[in-house]
Image 1 (cartoon, rainbow, N blue to C red):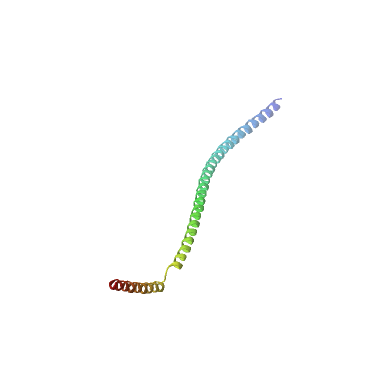
Image 2 (image 1 turned 90 degrees about the vertical axis):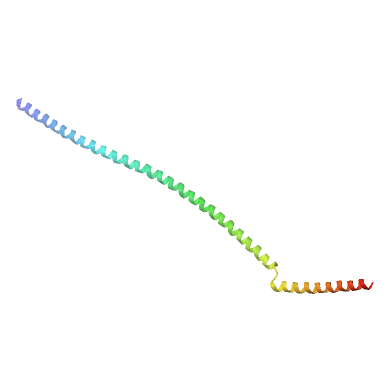
Length: 130
């Protein structure tokens, strides 16, 4: 019986030792788990920051794209206006007299003024005769 009691005591002591080791292992696991939780918290914070930054970047890209579309629209309008002005300029050029045309017109005017002067002179002479 005494032998049995010793064996039982030894077994119980072994269990106590094993429990002590298990407690230490559990404490180590808890510490590592705490460290992992801190890392996860840091990663979640970084993820939140990255999401916010991505949202801001997306908004900026949309604003840039909208601005670019607006600028293209303005440029298209300007191109249309320039083409219209070029057409008008071509029409004006066609209607404008060349130097030769102007010279011919001056010659005709001189001829007509000369005729008018002769007619007036003749009328003046005729009036004197009457």
